[in-house]
Length: 233
Image 1 (cartoon, rainbow, N blue to C red):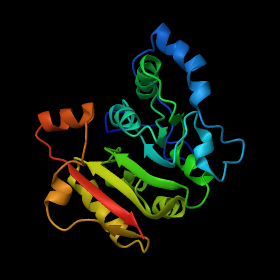
Image 2: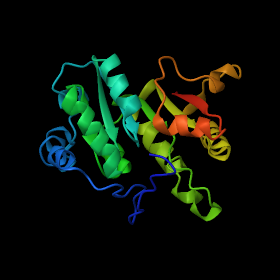
Image 3: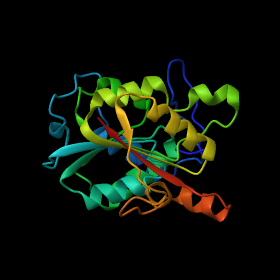
Image 4: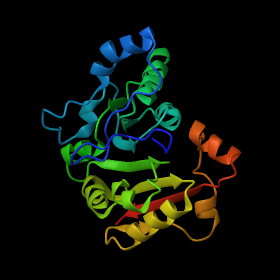
């Protein structure tokens, strides 16, 4: 999710749902038939072993919050077939792009959720994830909206609970103020340590990074990105 795809803030939620362009018939069909098969059911307790959620045998599970058009998540799920991925994206047109990609090339190691990411975090068992990715989230530029930013003390507590010791929380943004905000919040949190020894550790993309359409737009408009990595102590 990014600043062009503003979510609707529901009571108590960070993410709502929003339509962009009208869905084509095939996209609507994917929502009706493919998404229900891949969508997490939060009405039943999460398995203590999250690998049971996936059609393919996997040995660990990662989560991407606000995957936008799904470029990174789809790429990573193909790159690491032995890893299970949970992708959350409430913006309907972003989910439509992901479903279309999966329709063309199946991803048995991928599960999806199309509403509030905090609901998934609260549903997950303790120390069950090997990583959390949050790339180009909505920066909520206006000061009165900063409380809506996904990086918050409450959500970092959620991350700390569900991440295994040694697991990574990765954050990328082209908004300098949000980068500094995230650094400040994570560095004062007792359970996270910033993994950086020099400028290359935050100026250079992650290994194997495929880029995203939003990132390409930011670069065209002259903005630079920062790529932060925090370790769960």
